[in-house]
Amino acid sequence: MGLAMAVNLVRAGFELRGYDIAAVAREGLVGAGGVAVGSVAEAADGQSLLLVVVARAEQAESVLFGGAGAVTSGEGGAVAALAPGATVVLHSTVSPAYARDLGERLATAGHRLLDAPISGGRVGAEGGNLSIMASGSPAAFDVAARAFEVMAGRVYRLGDEPGTGSTVKMINQHLAGVHIAAAAEAMALGTRAGADPATLFEVISGSAGNSWMFSNRVPHMLERDFSPRSAVEIFVKDLGIVLETGKELRFPLPIAASAHQQYLAAAAGGHGGEDDAAVVKVYERLADIEVKG
Amino acid sequence: MGLAMAVNLVRAGFELRGYDIAAVAREGLVGAGGVAVGSVAEAADGQSLLLVVVARAEQAESVLFGGAGAVTSGEGGAVAALAPGATVVLHSTVSPAYARDLGERLATAGHRLLDAPISGGRVGAEGGNLSIMASGSPAAFDVAARAFEVMAGRVYRLGDEPGTGSTVKMINQHLAGVHIAAAAEAMALGTRAGADPATLFEVISGSAGNSWMFSNRVPHMLERDFSPRSAVEIFVKDLGIVLETGKELRFPLPIAASAHQQYLAAAAGGHGGEDDAAVVKVYERLADIEVKG
Image 1: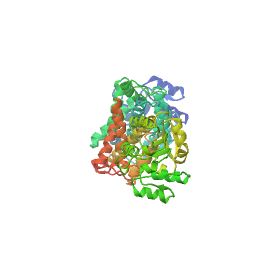
Image 2 (image 1 turned 90 degrees about the vertical axis):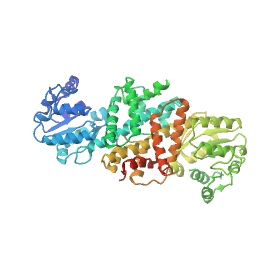
Image 3 (image 1 turned 60 degrees about the horizontal axis):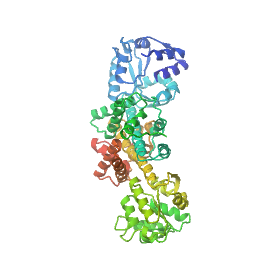
Image 4 (image 1 turned 45 degrees about the horizontal axis):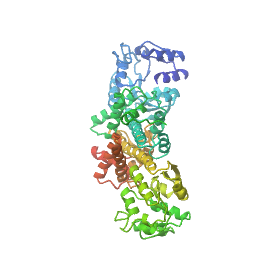
């Protein structure tokens, strides 16, 4: 997603310096007329706006504060290289607790954090049609405004403090994750009970049992196309954030917990890198059926 | 719902004889210009088409075959009174196994069954805009066609055998029940984590976490309006059918099972007769919060 967002910014006239640990992403940026550099520190050097598009908090930590990590090559982090008083936009889905803590650490270093998780996947990123669920100071929003306009179809301003953006995204992911797993469970049960999967999809997608995810992901199941638009491992992570937050708040989440177990079962079966709709394979394997139509 | 459906049929010119154990429903039918009678046997007497609109299989059993039940006054059942070769339309949400068995028993008695559960609630019934998910013989569909046209916005013809209609409805109820409970769990977690419930609703209902039920039921929570459009007890029953069917088929349903427990918890708290959105009270009571906005 980071490459698609960077390309859109370059096309819109931004003088952007991009870094990705993957050479193919750096080459993609150069191919689109952008500038790729050799490290996060070089990308951040003297800049007043830094957009971080990585999957996990540990990766964001490595990008911002250095040290060897999955997405850096081990040099110093970006924060030390930024211009004074810079704005850091974290687009990753992280726990609200991490976003708040990062906001405090960046403030101590003289910078601002915009807690700005994104939704819409690779398709949304390529089309400049992401949703951004963001919180942070008005000054930080001002700095990021022009870039957000290029990358997003909708920007939700959710308050002045880092943490709220991540809270709202977390709730979205709770529901998205439960809905995909429930779609898999229901379609598999219906198939096992003798209904035709394509007919089930047609009726349910026009009925009260429908969800955004049911409409979007069940076709992946029916077409047996599990190329990852978003992977099973993303919900292992995101429902993990939901459950970890529930644990910290002493708030029980039995439905999210049972859905999380099904993504873990899919990953256990070797499907972690496949499309999240592959969670249906957990049910299919149990009963030797196929949700196909 | 039965009254609303009967009134629409009367207004469309059907010569209908209606029975309900509740005097208020019989009076409602008479007030709309219809004919109310004193027993199910009297309603069925010599008829070639019988529509049964009760909540549960046990009630359908009592209506059709007599004996004291919650919805009859203890006389003989409707089946013995019907004209030979009549069509019985069962609009209740029952297990596919019950629908199949009933179809066989009615066939033995020389009648046809249309397994025809409905969706759309009281609002859909009043507006003549129900969805009917039906299976049964083409001859049975022919007999019911004109009534279906009056009562329903959509009729799904799902095959020639009783059981398929109930299977599709069961899958719809699996998802509907999980989605409402998940909406409650997610909204309550977000509220506990400090987000504004009304803002959460606005963002999620426009995002990938949305479901038909999320859009429809969360406003009941935010407005604290738990007058029953459809009650908690309906999902105690319908997810119960889902789980019973899973047990018979040896098909595990961890997500439906965890949602069912939350409806049981709501009923345990005295909310069984309230709107199904009252499942949120289970979470609210645990953490002393309110999803209100």
